[in-house]
Image (cartoon, rainbow, N blue to C red; front, side, top):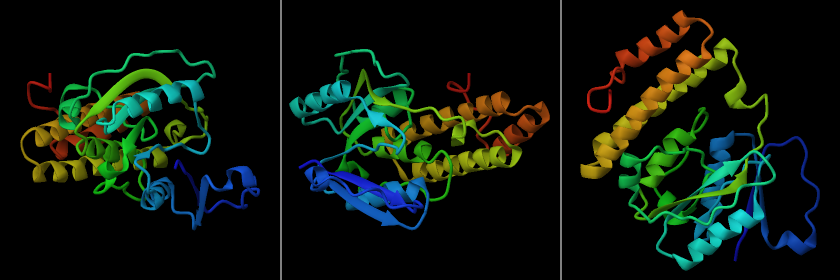
Amino acid sequence: NDVIIVIDDGSDLFPPTVSSRYAHEILYHRQTNSGLSEARNTGLSLATGDYIQFVDADDMLMTNSYQRCLDHLFTHPAIDILQFRHTTTRHPSVSKAFSEPVAGADYLYSSNLRPAAWGYIFRLHCAEKVRFTKSILHEDEEFTPLLFLQADNICSTDEEAYFYRQRPLSITHRDDQQWMERRFSDFRSIMDRLTEQALRLKGGSRAALQRRIEQLSMNYVYQALLLYPDFKMAEKAISILSEKGYFPQPSPHGK
């Protein structure tokens, strides 16, 4: 049976009592505030179903579009991960197109990954060896490529099945210098850990993860030039990346 796992990550107040009509469908777990990564890790440890879907507290699933995604999974049981799109409006576009499944390593090597952890439905067994790193920003950038490497069949669709609520004070919209330095520092640490993982892999999986690391380094450079108001600050952030050997990149991808 489907179960909604609600992780209360140290909120100030307990939520109101859940209606008895839905109580059997909800597993409520309260924990000391530990951050998003640990909340998701707790959810993964409590999950017992076949598939997982993350939903952030201020977002929601678009019923009709999401149901079409579920229907596709039910009729194609070999799919390990189904990736869909998000919308910021209450009236998503309708698309019934679903791609042919590809292996996770092939997808990483040939496609631009959308890292948001709420952007796909995935089989629980794909996450057996994968967890979110605690107390970092941009944790999805590390989790998602490692998860995709565990999948034999990944399918994508343009269905806008997830409603993403944009908030001006969210992590991605803060711009004070200390916060910015932490963002870029965490981003570099993610690239370092992915590089360590890549060295343990072989063949196509190693090449695919290395390709993802190259994409992350280019995104880092782009974000530094975009977000830092002072070019010297951006130059400093990029120079640290260069010292680690991530930039500039070798051909052919470096072009």
